[in-house]
Length: 168
Image 1 (cartoon, rainbow, N blue to C red):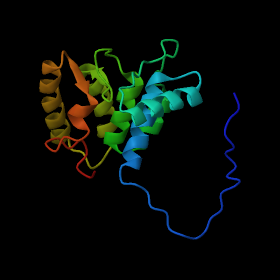
Image 2 (cartoon, rainbow, N blue to C red):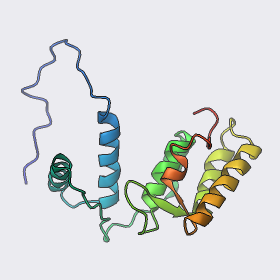
Image 3 (cartoon, helix red, strand yellow):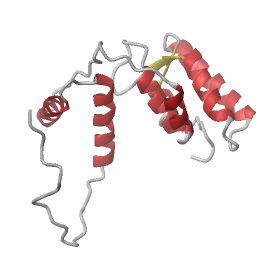
Image 4 (cartoon, helix red, strand yellow):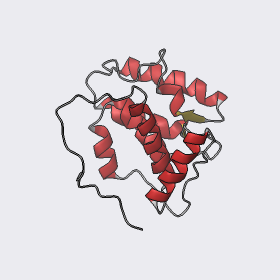
């Protein structure tokens, strides 16, 4: 399958400002997360089906490719450690999504895995105190108990009660 020309030919910079719809960054972020989770063999075909479903207002099933096994390697942990805690945890949860009952756009990991990741990322951050770590883990452990032992990304990503890192 041929790829679209990505050289930018046919497009010229006019010096005019470009309006970016407010929803675009969130929409593209969700598409990216879904594509990472699905690991499609043909990203163009996947994108066509994804966006066609969106235009028609139909649900699009994001099924992980069972042949693709993603793991948190030391290299990935190092990359995650260089990011802010919330973004790093979100990405780690999507990489390790271990609960097939978790519905998109959420990803789920066991509380034990979350505790390990959060502690790993937070301990090296001078802005996060041990009492902050304890508060976060206590709150999310209670949430996990009501979620069959898993922490969902939605439990911490936009939760105003919960600040994973006081600086972000």
